[in-house]
Amino acid sequence: MTRSTFLVTVSGPDRIGVGAELFHGLHSLEGEGVHLVDVAQITIRGTLVLCAEVITESNLTAASLTAVLLEREIEGHGMSVQVEAVTPTDAIEGRRLLVTLLAPQITAGQLEAVFHAIAESHATCERIVHLASYPVDCYELIVIGPDHAVLRASLTDVAEVCGLDFAVQRAGLHRRSKHLVVIDADSTLLQHEVIDLLGEATGRSEEVSRITRAAMSGEIDFGEALRQRVALLAGLPVSVLDDVRAQLHLAPGARTLLRTLQRLGYVAAVVSGGFVEVLAPLLAELNVEYFAANRLEIVDGVLTGGIVGEIIDRAGKARALRRFADEVGVPLEQTVAVGDGANDIDMLSTAGLGIAFNAKAMVQAHADAALSVPYLDAVLYFLGISREEIETG
Image (cartoon, rainbow, N blue to C red; front, side, top):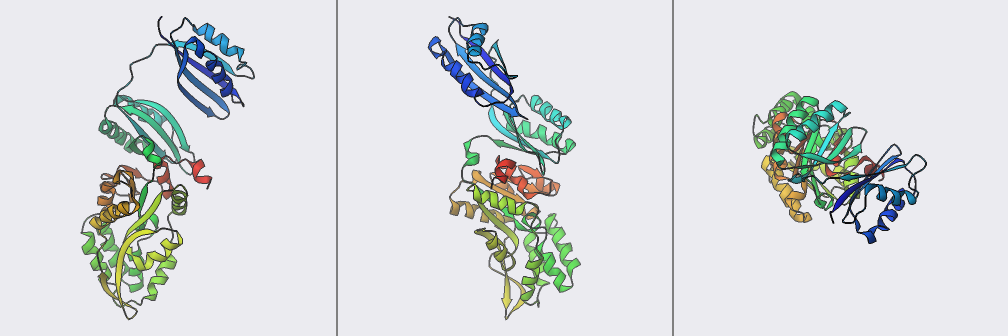
């Protein structure tokens, strides 16, 4: 006997019990050599499309299979059943990858460009999931393709033209295993550069800000820039640290990001070129246990203009990520790093997934993904966490 493959499609207004009816009908045919090999379902705005692929080595035809299923009274109330014989095609070889697309609004034109890029990379899309529609639009695609690098390069070109943020990651259960998410503080978790706020208290804010901009763009070494700026703080009373902390505002979505990560069992950490004395109380309030930052030298209640201990610079941030991963007990491939400045590059490159957050092109070039939207909780979409899951907390 010849093996035959059939695709069974049930579609129409969703109602309770449709799935049970379909699978009961297929189960009744198992004695005749009919076996279920794959199933997929999607419901959009109350309209159901449920597909089942079955194989058989009997003389069963599409018409006879349809007749058996109709006996289960699946049809009715606008629901229809269609059975068609299909010829199995050669499977596309390659890795299963997750492509996450994100923008304020994703249009058909943008998706057209993305799917052209997928096709030109000799890949195919197996599944599409709409993770969020607000405050940003986000789709996750399961793509099978032979060359990860080629697909990423094609999508990079499309993203630049179409104004899309995207990430390409390896698919698998590891995404929902224990993760460490390490977040930069200044201009990422926070809307400010703490050192600039301290500079305002000295009356030399423009000088401090100028050095900050040069450091963030990579024009000067971060460690040297930090020493120069901290030296300008000499003589400030320690009380100014409390004043600066009172001025801090979290980035939009920062609390949601941390709260969701913690609720779902992820570990959140913060690394900063800023200062422990300013950040520690805020991070304690946010239940962030793991963090690394610089320590200011304070003598008799006054800032000396010096730093105590190891400087958390570009290399120091990467070391902190590795240290946290060891302490938490997760491999580096299950770490995520989020940052915006040149001093975050080593950390972004070290993590399993590096995300540049509203960063300059130089930083984006060293990251696996880039976010250009102002909402920090959009990081969650790159972990496959939907808006619905976020809001259930």
